[in-house]
Length: 499
Image (tube, rainbow, N blue to C red):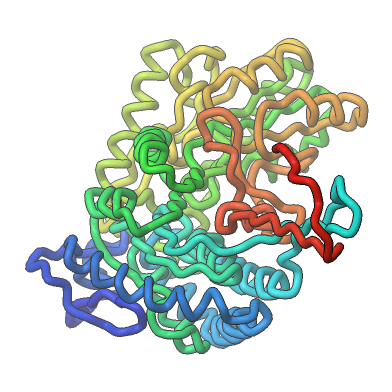
């Protein structure tokens, strides 16, 4: 596909498309096809941000006093529109990120599911009641909105992650300003466009384009009271420091070094499918992608690694607008070089490339940033490839002698997002679920596949975040503050109480 004319996007400030005050722009190309340009986007300025904040402040005074079930009607309608336009939105998403269309459709479905779930929460924003120390007195604690939320999603799920942030923010009565990644700017823009078509009042949401430097301006703006960011641990720690100094509420979803533990009694067919798609689906560019296979040395472990490598070699890599392709490109050329650097250093440390280990070139590969699905064996627990996030289609294979060593190796990283164990032993599975140091644990399933329902809290431990959660009812904690109300109905004077 070649775009005949380049679309120049405007910022969406409170529901109105406006030119940026900047004269600088950046362009976004399909990582699978350098001839396919999605558009030209402004590098927004302080003036643009101040205008969006002013609109948001006015809208907040109305939106926070709108009954939550009425706010829910916007999310229900947005879900209906998204259902009707699912295929076109998935096409945009694939062009932005390179991920297969089947995965893009799944991501748009996640947006729909997220809207539907949080719309339901419009009738379940519960508080608490309690017993007073005094007669004829009641205590009620309620949730209330906080104000303007700055939402900064990553590029790898450019539709789902903004919906994870915007839906709970809006249903609880907040307003939001979204800065999508410059590597995937269109999906969040479409998300907000649909919210306004669904009846969102003017000013309640804005989309401002820009680089990481502009994201820093959002974090530091004194009138933006909540920051939610998905990104690297390095960036997240800086954001956390700024928010701490400014006493802002902050939600961080950061890096991961996820692992699948395979014990000697694992179902090998189930394990193969899980490792293959957790490691190479989305070209290994999920926060929850499996980048370590911790396998117990057994009579079949060597044969399994060979079987896995053969399956990886058979995966079709290419432009995923063609549905025969199963693995797309990595997001940028700089990221491809970074991925290859990890592989080269692993080889120097003693690792053995079982398959892949190279950028793909020739023919249509030269149009994009493709990297071969890669399996590297002989990795030791303290090697770089075993401990640091790669964010690409590279799997480190680490052999261990028993369950105890497997648990220790799985926990041997600064990250703690998603870990998995494959075993038929229910006792070991339950022990693992208790001892694995991560916010998400899977048993006999891969590290990917988080849901958005009530009990499905998405987030990690250690350097993966700050304890906040996205998806499910716990996401409401980021966007609400508690107020305790004391009601005295005794109608008589009472002796003053000392706190």
